[in-house]
Length: 88
Image (tube, rainbow, N blue to C red):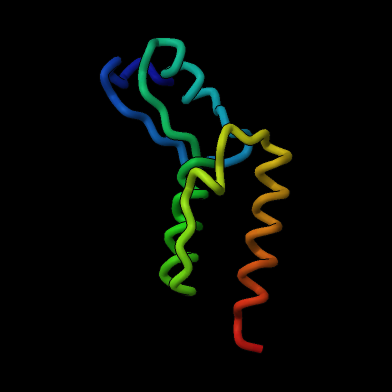
């Protein structure tokens, strides 16, 4: 399905689990640049956290080549942190 995408394209897939989809794998095998849904999700979560709570957080701190299981666990940790800051 990736035949119509040029080799110099940057391909982003919004699916976060699995972190490497068939599309991303095909593009990566051709030497293309890819952005996974997991990366997208983490960057969005960090920006939302900063906007809502005014606390600085780096995407590097939230994500550094984590496995899918670590990703799920980190999402749960972030959710708990956000819940602590929500008004009751």
